[in-house]
Image 1 (cartoon, rainbow over the protein chains, first blue to last red):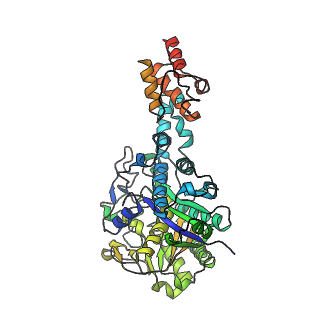
Image 2 (tube, rainbow over the protein chains, first blue to last red):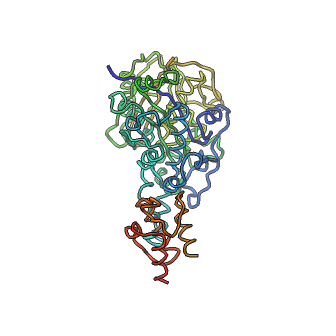
Image 3 (cartoon, rainbow over the protein chains, first blue to last red):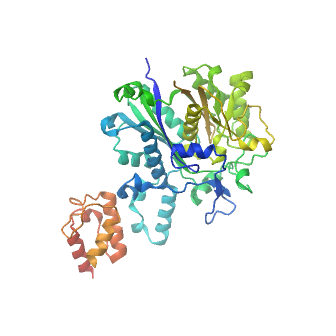
Length: 414
Length: 72
């Protein structure tokens, strides 16, 4: 019999707040967290607004010695992970660190460190490049720094799959726990894309909104006025545990949710015909439901990727219609990241974390801009800032460059 | 003066142990390979002398001071 996987802690560092509680309150305050992005050398090549993290206090958690080694995304990862572990009441000293894994979704690593290293190379010479660059610029760096910060020694992985990275990291960690390789994992995603060099790469995909004239217009998927994504930096992490881990530390009361099935598909071709992309996205949803102890009719909340292009939004909506048919109208849809920006490799992790909190609080985040917009979809989006709606099961969708589709079902556990 | 500069360089890494002229960079202060490379780079900037990090691994603070003095 396969092991169940439970969510016992949620942690976040992001534009809405620097811990999960503050983030949730910030999100439901109705504030738009997109602020002017002022970076040198990016005129016309970077979104005018982005979700930016302010007021971090890393020295409260990270030693000066380790902090010196870390890129910004590693710092956010450690802070969000600590927040999640505090929420779960993990006492690492009484847990087997060799049976705890670290799974991180990330797309672009610490490019601000890499860019600075290149600057030094060309201005001062190779001997003067910060030696820490060797171990802090690449996506797996956060996993390593988290291991150093918490002395966690179990089976760990970093996943790179564009906007699906964070969701897949959670799915792969759940699989490792189910299979018995580890008993618990700290898992999620982190991204710091607000760097001139990183933005030049993200911009090449053509999905960024470079023309927004206000924060409210920066990120509006699923309506006619859409004009691309706004980006954000941040990290979201969850504590996942097996039933055995819960029993060992007598923590069954800490359960927030359970991880159910996941599905992952690829279009198999660059710029696939629309119907092929819809079919693969629908297949990912069916796989996720098929591997769950959940019936399709039990899913009450759909958390969407929301790339804010007509094609990408259309793929998601059509795939949902294909899978759920008329019953899609009975489900609530949302895309909370529209209030703070898309964190790319962390986006799936934020969406899972926020879905867990939404189910726990019985309140679903809405799309505040819907009232002043012309929707071009036929899903039942949560209106306004939020609505008091209790759901027992959520489906989280994430997509990515080159036709990646991933889906995860998460249930609220009584 | 030289000692203070070297101490500041090592302090900046975040070393909590007391730093004296007798402190071994590797055995006493437990600098890892990256931190030794950082010290090597910082000494090169501060004093114009390049000491390879694999040499620094065997040095005390006093030996670093001697190397700087020889260069001067």
